[in-house]
Amino acid sequence: MTVPFVLAVPSKGRLQENTEAFFTRAGLALAKPRGARDYRGTLTGLDNVEIAYLSASEIASQLARGMVHLGVTGEDLLRESIPDADKRVLLIDSLGFGSANVVVAVPQAWIDVRTMADLDDVTTGFRAQHNRRMRVATKYINLTRNFFAAHGVVDYRIVESAGATEGAPAVGTAEMIVDITTTGATLAANGLKVLDDGVILRSQANLVASRDADWSAEARETARVILDHIAARARASQYREVRTRFTGCNEALLNEAHNRFGVVAPFGGPTSSGMLTLHCPPMHLYALGSFLREHGADTVSIASLDYVLDRENPLFARLETFLRQ
Ligand SMILES: Nc1ncnc2c1ncn2[C@@H]1O[C@H](COP(=O)(O)OP(=O)(O)OP(=O)(O)O)[C@@H](O)[C@H]1O
Ligand SMILES: O=P(O)(O)OC[C@H]1O[C@H](OP(=O)(O)OP(=O)(O)O)[C@H](O)[C@@H]1O
Ligand SMILES: [Mg+2]
Image (cartoon, rainbow, N blue to C red; front, top):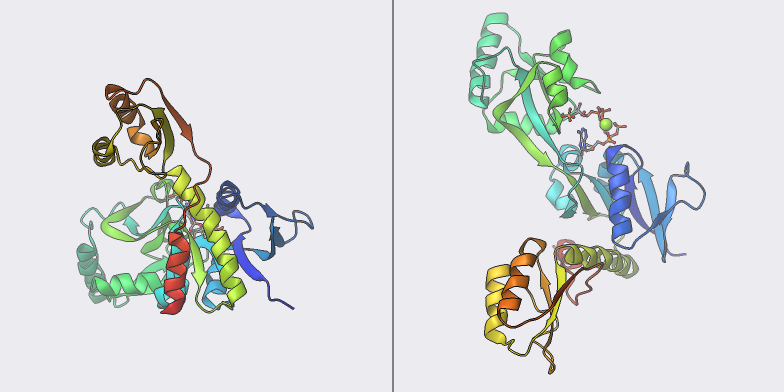
C-alpha cells in the first residue's frame, strides 16, 4: 500500500477561499468527492494526493510534526507554534494573501508611549509603583516573549487570550496586547495604537513544506509535479507575451529591450522571417510596444499567459535543498 501524499489547506476563514483560488489558478483543482462537509479531498489528476482540510493553526502543528507534506497557512502561526521554525519547515513561497501584522498595541491614551523603549520605561515604573507587572494579553506567547526580550523589556506578564484580545485593556484584564491586525479597524475601535517600532512580524499565507514528513521518492515526485504547476502559473503571471515581426530586429535591440523593460526572449532571437516572441513585465508593455514600433515593427500583439513551463523549477529546487540539509 502506498502512503498518500498529504496537502493541508485551510478549512474555513479568510484563508480558505484564497487558497482554493490559488490552486485552481495553478491548474490544480481541489475536489471534495464525498461532499462539502467532508474534511478529506482530492486533487484532480493526481491520484495519490489527499487533501486535508484543517484550521490554519492545526496546519502549522501538523507541518511541525511531519503529519502532512505540504500545507498553506499563515507565517504568524508557524513562527508562533514551531520553535526553530526554519529548521522544521520550509516556507516555499509567500502567496500574496492573508496579509496581517502581529503588533504590540497600547491604549491611545498613553500619549508618551510611542516606542518599545518608552514601553520599557513604563513597565519598569509600573512594577516599582504597583508591585506587580504589567499584563500583555495575547495568543502569540512565543513571538511576544522573543520580541520583548530583544527590546530588553522584562517587567511584564503574559495573559493568554483566546479571542477578542483587543478588548482586554478596556475590560481590565490586561494593560496592553499583542495581536494580529490588517486594516487597524479593530485596534482603533478599541482605543489602541501600534507602537512605532512595534511590528513583530509581517505575515502572509505561505506554501510550506514539512521536513519530517515521509519524503519517499514517490512523495518527492508528487511535490515536484505540484510545485511545477505552481511555478508555471507564477512565471506566467509575471509576464505578458509580446509578439511582433520586423526584419531590423537584432541582438543589440534585444539587449536594449532587456535592460530598459525587463524583457526576456524565451525562444531566442527572431526567426528567419523576423517573428519575435518576448515576455515582458506588465508595467512596461506600452513602452516596449512603442520601442518596437520605433525600430520598425508595424504591429505588436500582447496576450496574457496562462502557464509557462520552464525546465527550471525554482520552488522544487528550494525544497530539494531544504530536505538535503
Ligand atoms: N485580519 C486578520 N485577522 C486574523 N487572521 C488573519 C487576518 N488576515 C490574515 N489572517 C491569517 O489567518 C490566520 C487565522 O485564520 P483562522 O482564524 O481561520 O484560523 P485559526 O485562528 O487557526 O482558527 P481558530 O480561529 O478556529 O482557532 C491568521 O493566523 C493569519 O495568518
Ligand atoms: O485589523 P483588522 O482588519 O480590524 O483585523 C484584525 C482582527 O481580525 C481578526 O479577528 P477575526 O474577526 O478574524 O476573529 P478571530 O479572532 O476569531 O479570528 C483578528 O484576530 C483581529 O481581531
Ligand atoms: Mg481565528
